[in-house]
Every structure is written in structure tokens, then in C-alpha cells.
Amino acid sequence: MLSDSEAGILRLRDWAGLSCRPVYVYDRAYPVGGVTWEGEGTSPSAAWLVREGSVCVTTGRHKATAQVGEWIVPSRGRHRCEFSPDAAILSMRFNAIWPDGRPLISPERGVVLKGAGVRGLTRLAKRLERFSTKNFTLADTGMEWKRADAVQYLALNRHFFAWLEVFVRLLGEAECPPTTPARADERALRAAHVLNTLPMTESWDLEWLAGQAGVSVAQLNRLFVAAFETTPKAYHLERRKRTAAYLVGEERLPIKQAALALGFSSACYFTAWFRAQFGEPPRRWLARKAAEEQRKNETV
Image (tube, rainbow, N blue to C red; front, side, top):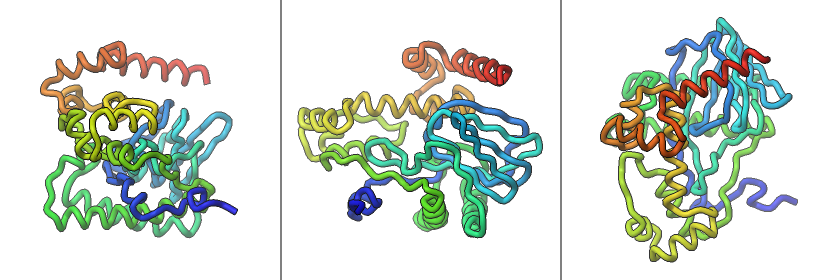
């Protein structure tokens, strides 16, 4: 018999540690026809509704192909995405992250959602897309920076959580259940949750974070290392690096925009930081990644 944790049953206070927010949603706003991409699954999570053509996700020897009207969820591991020349998609990007940094949705390979159940998922996605486009954004990564009043904020989350509820249920039915948080001291989880939800533009120090967790700085470091095998500073640095790689590598944001999104006062400071973390400046790193991808495509 499965334990509550194995069955995905947690205390409500544990579920409260899950950080969820939409990053963007768009319907056919960007051309994807003929695009091929290979790499690691990154945060934020992705789900695509095929509007036209087809989308194929290959993970190792496993291949998942979605046709018109079906949803496809790429793997969190290394995979290859291929969009047919006539492909068009509704794209959902969102964060659903536990305090230990693990995503709620973590498929080991591509998953296709199809059948009668996806009609409700599609209807809710379109509702969210219409609301978001009308009130905040059209197909950009800056939804979290948009301004809203209380009613707009609550309405956005009502639409998003309605979609997410059906999405998680359908994935579970497709034998891809949601993850559960790591067992760790609640004070360490509280500190990790703060770091996961802290805007990248905001600075912080250990004294402030320790106060948020209700412990001393020494206690915070000890509890954090015991829970996550890393320090709070190193944990947050990895989050910044993942975000930088996503903004530069997947979203192809201009360097200045990526710098502002990460809290740097200028593109020069961001470039210097990026070089220190990745061994080369953003444009050279991006060019190398593109060249590597092209070589792999040529050998397939």
C-alpha cells in the first residue's frame, strides 16, 4: 500500500510551499514551423497545443508525436523537439516549483495528451490566453513585470489554476504524476521558497533570509546544506544561471533586456557576470550552442 507521500497526498501547509505562476501564453503568435531544437528541459515548464501540423519530442529512443488538437509536454531531461514545416501551436509556459527547486511537472520523456479530456484543457487555455492578451501581454516573457490591480491578479490566477488543475490531472492519467517536495526541515524549505519566489531584480543578504526563516545565519546555513547539499548563496546563484540560460538561449532576448530581467544595471555588467559563470560572453555562448545544435542536426 502506498504511503500518503507516495500517493501525492500532503498537508495543505506543504502544498502552500508550491510556487506557481504563468510565464506567458500565446496562440499562434510566433512562427515555429520547421524549427528543430535539442537540449535540456529548463525552467519554466512547457506545454504545447498543436494547432496545425505536428510536433515531435524525442527522448533517447522514445519518440512522442502530437497531431492537431493534441497537447504535448516535453521532457525535463535532454530531448529533441521538431516542429513540422506547417506547425502552429498554442504555447503555455509556467513555473510550478517546490521549495527544493524541483518542478511539479517533471516528465522523463515527451508526453502526448489526447482524447476527449483535452477539449476542456484547450478551452481553459484559450480563456487564459484571451484574458492575458487583453490585460497584460502578447507572447513575451515579461508577464511577471506587468502591472495589475487585485481583481486582475486574482482573475489571472483563477484562469491559470483552472487550467493547471486539469493539466496535472491529465498528466497523472497518462502515468506522469506530479512530484512531491523533498523531506527537509521546514525552516530550510521556508528559506528556499523565499529564494524561489524572490524577483531576480531584488537584492538580499543572509541576515535578511535568516530572519524570514526564523533562525540565525549559522543555523540557516547548516539547515540549508543538510536539506539541499548547497548553501543559500550557491542555491540562488544556480537559479540565476538557469534563468539567464533560458532568457538568452531559449527566449533569445536581447542582452539588455536579459540584463534588466536579472537585475543588472547595464548590459556590460551582465555580460561580465555571464562570462564568469559560463566561461564566455552571452553572444559567443549562444553562437556556440547554435553551432553545436546544427552539427547534431546534420548528423541525424
